[in-house]
Length: 108
Image 1 (cartoon, rainbow, N blue to C red):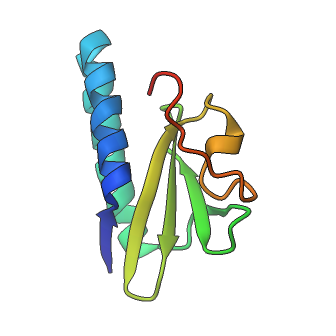
Image 2 (image 1 turned 90 degrees about the vertical axis):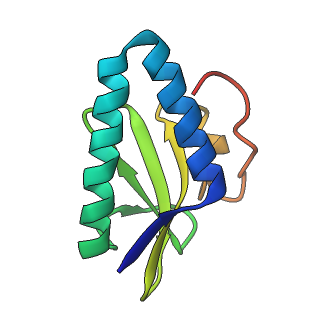
């Protein structure tokens, strides 16, 4: 199964990794490695995440890092829609009961 990051998720991830790399290169490398492993797992088990309020949406925690990956899975593809810090306002998270939001406030 194909797994890909939507452009907004790719841009969020780049900002997060830049932010972390300035403060802790080891944390940035760890998060990138954790995400790589997650992408492999999603290709094998696309429905492993917890459902969100959006019936098509799912969420995974990038443990041990405080980041959430939001995605949708079809029969042929998994699309990572967003990657957000878990401390961000839940109303700005994908699948948050229609609140949506741009999620532009605060740091990554």
